[in-house]
Image (cartoon, rainbow, N blue to C red; front, side):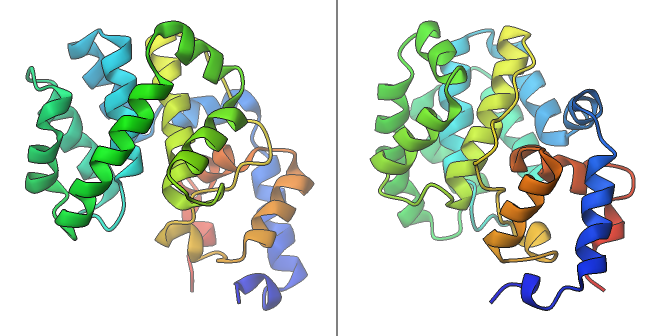
Length: 227
Protein backbone atom coordinates (compact mmCIF):
# COMPACT_ATOMS: atom_id res chain seq x y z
CA UNK A 1 0.00 0.00 0.00
CA UNK A 2 1.34 3.45 -0.90
CA UNK A 3 2.27 6.21 1.46
CA UNK A 4 -0.88 8.22 0.91
CA UNK A 5 -2.46 6.23 3.73
CA UNK A 6 0.30 7.28 6.13
CA UNK A 7 0.96 10.79 4.87
CA UNK A 8 -0.37 13.59 7.01
CA UNK A 9 -2.79 15.98 5.34
CA UNK A 10 -0.33 18.79 6.12
CA UNK A 11 2.39 16.93 4.19
CA UNK A 12 0.15 16.52 1.16
CA UNK A 13 -0.79 20.20 1.43
CA UNK A 14 2.89 21.14 1.47
CA UNK A 15 3.47 19.31 -1.80
CA UNK A 16 0.29 20.69 -3.35
CA UNK A 17 1.19 24.27 -2.39
CA UNK A 18 4.69 23.83 -3.78
CA UNK A 19 3.51 22.47 -7.13
CA UNK A 20 0.93 25.24 -7.51
CA UNK A 21 3.71 27.84 -7.43
CA UNK A 22 4.77 26.91 -10.95
CA UNK A 23 3.22 28.38 -14.06
CA UNK A 24 3.19 26.71 -17.46
CA UNK A 25 6.09 28.96 -18.46
CA UNK A 26 8.04 27.95 -15.35
CA UNK A 27 7.49 24.26 -16.07
CA UNK A 28 8.63 24.67 -19.67
CA UNK A 29 11.87 26.31 -18.56
CA UNK A 30 12.47 23.59 -15.98
CA UNK A 31 11.91 20.79 -18.48
CA UNK A 32 14.23 22.35 -21.03
CA UNK A 33 16.98 22.13 -18.39
CA UNK A 34 16.37 18.39 -18.02
CA UNK A 35 19.59 16.49 -18.93
CA UNK A 36 17.43 14.07 -20.92
CA UNK A 37 15.97 16.99 -22.91
CA UNK A 38 19.46 18.29 -23.61
CA UNK A 39 20.58 14.85 -24.76
CA UNK A 40 17.71 14.78 -27.25
CA UNK A 41 18.60 18.25 -28.50
CA UNK A 42 22.12 17.10 -29.25
CA UNK A 43 20.90 13.95 -30.97
CA UNK A 44 18.47 15.81 -33.22
CA UNK A 45 21.17 18.29 -34.11
CA UNK A 46 23.21 15.45 -35.58
CA UNK A 47 20.35 13.50 -37.16
CA UNK A 48 18.12 16.27 -38.57
CA UNK A 49 15.73 13.46 -39.52
CA UNK A 50 12.39 13.66 -37.73
CA UNK A 51 11.19 10.12 -38.44
CA UNK A 52 14.41 8.44 -37.33
CA UNK A 53 14.68 10.77 -34.35
CA UNK A 54 11.21 9.91 -33.04
CA UNK A 55 11.64 6.21 -33.66
CA UNK A 56 14.94 6.13 -31.78
CA UNK A 57 13.64 8.20 -28.86
CA UNK A 58 10.44 6.21 -28.41
CA UNK A 59 12.07 2.81 -28.75
CA UNK A 60 14.67 3.81 -26.18
CA UNK A 61 11.96 5.14 -23.85
CA UNK A 62 10.15 1.82 -23.93
CA UNK A 63 13.38 -0.03 -23.14
CA UNK A 64 14.47 2.28 -20.31
CA UNK A 65 13.98 -0.01 -17.35
CA UNK A 66 16.33 -1.82 -14.96
CA UNK A 67 19.15 0.41 -16.13
CA UNK A 68 22.70 -0.21 -14.92
CA UNK A 69 23.33 3.53 -14.47
CA UNK A 70 21.47 6.77 -13.75
CA UNK A 71 18.91 7.70 -16.38
CA UNK A 72 20.61 11.01 -17.15
CA UNK A 73 23.87 9.24 -18.02
CA UNK A 74 22.04 6.58 -20.01
CA UNK A 75 20.35 9.14 -22.26
CA UNK A 76 23.64 10.96 -22.74
CA UNK A 77 25.22 7.71 -23.95
CA UNK A 78 22.20 7.07 -26.16
CA UNK A 79 22.63 10.47 -27.78
CA UNK A 80 26.36 9.96 -28.26
CA UNK A 81 25.91 6.50 -29.77
CA UNK A 82 23.31 7.44 -32.36
CA UNK A 83 24.98 10.75 -33.23
CA UNK A 84 27.74 8.89 -35.07
CA UNK A 85 25.85 7.62 -38.09
CA UNK A 86 24.30 4.59 -36.40
CA UNK A 87 20.91 3.30 -37.56
CA UNK A 88 17.97 1.53 -35.93
CA UNK A 89 19.64 -1.75 -36.87
CA UNK A 90 22.42 -0.88 -34.42
CA UNK A 91 20.03 -0.72 -31.45
CA UNK A 92 20.83 -4.27 -30.23
CA UNK A 93 24.51 -3.26 -30.07
CA UNK A 94 23.62 -0.19 -28.03
CA UNK A 95 21.67 -2.37 -25.60
CA UNK A 96 24.57 -4.80 -25.26
CA UNK A 97 26.93 -1.92 -24.47
CA UNK A 98 24.79 0.26 -22.21
CA UNK A 99 21.53 -1.46 -21.18
CA UNK A 100 22.58 -5.04 -20.61
CA UNK A 101 20.59 -6.11 -17.54
CA UNK A 102 18.21 -8.93 -18.57
CA UNK A 103 19.60 -8.39 -22.06
CA UNK A 104 17.86 -11.31 -23.77
CA UNK A 105 14.46 -10.07 -22.61
CA UNK A 106 15.26 -6.55 -23.80
CA UNK A 107 16.47 -7.77 -27.20
CA UNK A 108 13.21 -9.65 -27.62
CA UNK A 109 11.20 -6.62 -26.48
CA UNK A 110 13.16 -4.42 -28.88
CA UNK A 111 11.80 -6.29 -31.88
CA UNK A 112 8.22 -5.94 -30.67
CA UNK A 113 8.63 -2.27 -29.70
CA UNK A 114 10.29 -1.46 -33.02
CA UNK A 115 7.36 -2.93 -34.94
CA UNK A 116 4.88 -0.89 -32.90
CA UNK A 117 6.75 2.39 -33.31
CA UNK A 118 7.51 1.83 -37.00
CA UNK A 119 3.81 1.26 -37.59
CA UNK A 120 2.71 4.29 -35.54
CA UNK A 121 5.23 6.71 -37.03
CA UNK A 122 5.57 6.48 -40.79
CA UNK A 123 5.51 10.17 -41.64
CA UNK A 124 5.70 13.65 -40.13
CA UNK A 125 1.92 13.83 -40.42
CA UNK A 126 1.66 10.78 -38.15
CA UNK A 127 3.79 12.56 -35.57
CA UNK A 128 1.68 15.73 -35.73
CA UNK A 129 -1.52 13.72 -35.46
CA UNK A 130 -0.29 11.90 -32.36
CA UNK A 131 0.86 15.19 -30.83
CA UNK A 132 -2.72 16.44 -31.10
CA UNK A 133 -4.02 13.41 -29.20
CA UNK A 134 -1.42 12.13 -26.76
CA UNK A 135 -3.95 9.88 -25.02
CA UNK A 136 -4.49 8.12 -28.35
CA UNK A 137 -0.73 7.64 -28.61
CA UNK A 138 -0.72 6.25 -25.07
CA UNK A 139 -3.48 3.80 -25.99
CA UNK A 140 -1.66 2.66 -29.13
CA UNK A 141 1.46 1.80 -27.16
CA UNK A 142 -0.35 0.18 -24.24
CA UNK A 143 -2.64 -1.97 -26.38
CA UNK A 144 0.07 -2.96 -28.87
CA UNK A 145 2.48 -3.97 -26.11
CA UNK A 146 -0.23 -5.50 -23.91
CA UNK A 147 0.60 -3.20 -21.02
CA UNK A 148 -1.44 -1.04 -18.69
CA UNK A 149 -1.97 2.60 -19.60
CA UNK A 150 -0.17 3.65 -16.41
CA UNK A 151 2.86 1.36 -16.87
CA UNK A 152 6.07 3.29 -16.18
CA UNK A 153 7.74 2.88 -19.57
CA UNK A 154 4.48 3.56 -21.43
CA UNK A 155 3.85 6.93 -19.77
CA UNK A 156 7.55 7.74 -19.92
CA UNK A 157 7.41 7.28 -23.70
CA UNK A 158 4.67 9.93 -23.85
CA UNK A 159 6.84 12.30 -21.83
CA UNK A 160 9.77 11.78 -24.19
CA UNK A 161 7.46 12.20 -27.20
CA UNK A 162 6.61 15.66 -25.87
CA UNK A 163 10.31 16.49 -25.48
CA UNK A 164 11.08 15.21 -28.99
CA UNK A 165 8.20 17.17 -30.53
CA UNK A 166 9.26 20.43 -28.91
CA UNK A 167 12.77 19.94 -30.26
CA UNK A 168 11.95 18.74 -33.78
CA UNK A 169 8.96 21.00 -34.49
CA UNK A 170 9.83 24.01 -32.29
CA UNK A 171 6.36 23.94 -30.75
CA UNK A 172 5.83 23.78 -26.99
CA UNK A 173 3.15 21.14 -26.53
CA UNK A 174 2.01 19.90 -23.11
CA UNK A 175 0.48 16.70 -21.81
CA UNK A 176 -3.22 16.51 -20.91
CA UNK A 177 -4.34 15.52 -17.45
CA UNK A 178 -5.15 11.85 -16.96
CA UNK A 179 -1.77 10.32 -17.83
CA UNK A 180 0.05 8.77 -14.87
CA UNK A 181 3.42 10.05 -13.67
CA UNK A 182 6.31 7.60 -14.35
CA UNK A 183 6.61 5.83 -10.99
CA UNK A 184 10.39 5.50 -10.86
CA UNK A 185 12.41 5.08 -7.67
CA UNK A 186 12.55 8.84 -7.00
CA UNK A 187 8.83 9.47 -7.36
CA UNK A 188 8.01 6.33 -5.37
CA UNK A 189 9.88 7.81 -2.41
CA UNK A 190 7.06 10.35 -2.13
CA UNK A 191 4.28 7.84 -2.72
CA UNK A 192 3.80 4.57 -4.56
CA UNK A 193 0.04 5.05 -4.47
CA UNK A 194 -1.35 6.10 -7.84
CA UNK A 195 -4.40 7.60 -6.14
CA UNK A 196 -2.06 10.01 -4.35
CA UNK A 197 -0.82 11.27 -7.70
CA UNK A 198 -4.29 11.45 -9.24
CA UNK A 199 -5.42 13.54 -6.27
CA UNK A 200 -2.41 15.85 -6.64
CA UNK A 201 -3.17 16.36 -10.33
CA UNK A 202 -6.82 17.10 -9.57
CA UNK A 203 -6.02 19.59 -6.82
CA UNK A 204 -3.30 21.45 -8.73
CA UNK A 205 -4.67 21.21 -12.27
CA UNK A 206 -1.16 20.40 -13.50
CA UNK A 207 -0.74 17.22 -15.62
CA UNK A 208 1.26 14.56 -13.81
CA UNK A 209 3.83 14.27 -16.60
CA UNK A 210 4.80 17.87 -15.82
CA UNK A 211 4.54 17.55 -12.04
CA UNK A 212 7.37 15.04 -12.46
CA UNK A 213 9.69 17.80 -13.65
CA UNK A 214 8.55 20.25 -10.99
CA UNK A 215 9.40 17.84 -8.19
CA UNK A 216 12.77 16.64 -9.43
CA UNK A 217 14.26 19.34 -11.63
CA UNK A 218 13.27 22.47 -9.73
CA UNK A 219 15.78 23.98 -7.29
CA UNK A 220 13.96 22.79 -4.17
CA UNK A 221 13.32 19.18 -5.17
CA UNK A 222 15.01 17.88 -1.98
CA UNK A 223 12.06 19.25 -0.04
CA UNK A 224 10.25 16.03 -0.88
CA UNK A 225 13.08 13.53 -0.43
CA UNK A 226 12.32 10.68 1.90
CA UNK A 227 13.58 11.33 5.39
